[in-house]
Image (spheres, rainbow, N blue to C red):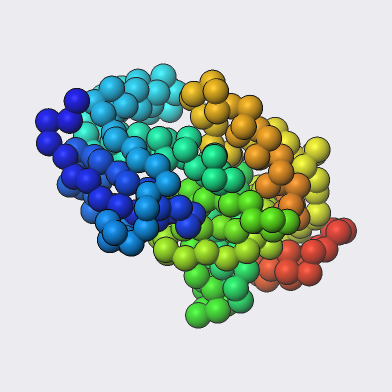
Length: 259
């Protein structure tokens, strides 16, 4: 049970949510998405408990990515923030929304999402877009945007879970494409398919712990990815890279596009 708490309402992926957390730091991290309590009837409520925080701590330890000493010195609100994102993402599956791991940049009203393995250069690539295209481009979310199925199109929404860069905006844009990045010595991009990239993309999509939500998440994932043009890119860290990816993705290129 919570010994004390902060209750507030927020809107994520255009869904009003009532949230109760213990740590003020967690509330502050959500402040850009907060709404007045009477602004809309919450679609659902979530309360982060001590059990939720412990589960996130155990999950992080079990990954083996970090030294246990490092994990154990992380502040309590870190695990609470992780638990909050998981609890909300579970519920948003019932509002045609999934959380996706990638860096999302908006250019001329369209969202372009770059994903890939750790160290593939997702954040570097989208930051290059902002350098190359200046005020025409901005980062919607640098780590975990929400993707919402809206008829035959998919909308990208900002979220408070934005990685180390702390780059996010409380706005949305239709998704123009998703690109799987790999580091390379030249810039080249090609259109790919869901059948080819299914495994790679599922690793980047929120996977619920609750078994009852798993089938729903897989079905929704397929629907969303089937609506989005998919690409694979070998990328340098030059200002040429965003030009190559943008030219291909804005036009929906089907073949290879080289520098």
